[in-house]
Structure formats: structure tokens, C-alpha cells
Figure 1 (cartoon, one colour):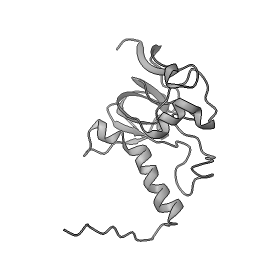
Figure 2 (cartoon, rainbow, N blue to C red; figure 1 turned 120 degrees about the horizontal axis):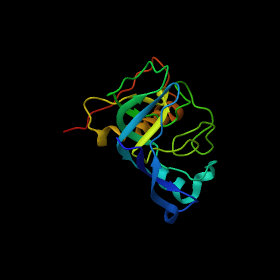
Figure 3 (tube, rainbow, N blue to C red; figure 1 turned 90 degrees about the vertical axis):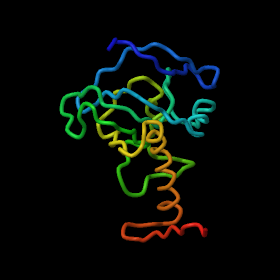
Figure 4 (cartoon, rainbow, N blue to C red; figure 1 turned 180 degrees about the vertical axis):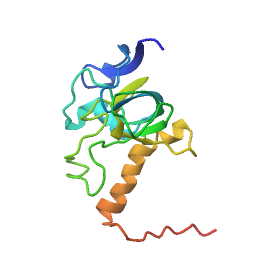
Length: 177
């Protein structure tokens, strides 16, 4: 492995400011893992962040993107949840584990990858181990990379809009056919 990688960076807002650049491969710090990125799913939110910043406190140079699938290739000290070789996906809001999120979709009080935190549109990322979960074994990297925001979208619809709570039952009718 060389000590350099490629990642997309912006030095200001706007698609014309997005460039593929060389950067050193990060080293994982205590509690962090280094992930070799296999796939990144881009979504409309990423487009909005690139074009307008969405009012987020971006620090330039900034790497966009929130949804990745990849493989753990190095561990920092004190990593206990993941191992080298584990396939993982990112978590969109790494500081939020469970329960209702603070704020709402228009005025989030939570911090996201590719928004508040640097994004994942890179060959490698080093983030805290808790910012990743195991990728489903039934999905390839491209498919798995689409789960972080889509899972949050489902959560938003079921919990924040419909008021679903632990112990409730959801019925999903099959189409007539």
C-alpha cells in the first residue's frame, strides 16, 4: 500500500469547486479504524451540500459524501468492535445511536457525515469504530453503500412522522397480484 490516496475535495461551495486530489492515507487514531472504501452512494443531500452547503458549518477543504461500504484495513489502539477484514457501512449520523433525534430534517441538531463531519468520497477514511456497522452479507458493496441514508429515511417516516414506538407492529401489505 502506498502512503497516498485520491479523494474528492472542495475549496468552496459549488460543483465547479469539486476536484479529485491526492492526499496522504490517514492513520487510525485510538478507537478508530481505517476503511478502504469500495463504494460510495451519492444522494440528493450530497448534491445540495456541494452546491449550497445547506447552511452547514463546512470546513474547507471539504470532502462530501455520507454513505460508504468498505473493508477495515487497519485498527487504532483500543478498537474492540471491528477487526481487519470486516466489511462495513458508514452511519449517517454517527453521534446518534437510538431514540428520537434532536431537531428535525429542516433544522437538524445532529451531526452528519459529509455535512458537519468530513465525508467519505475518498479511497480511505479513518473514523471512530462506532461510526461503522457491519455490512449485510447478502448485499454487494454497491448495494450496501445505499443503506445509511435510505435507512434513516425509513426511520424518519416510521418514527418521526408516524410516531412508531418500540413494541408497535407495522403491517406492510403485499400488492394484489
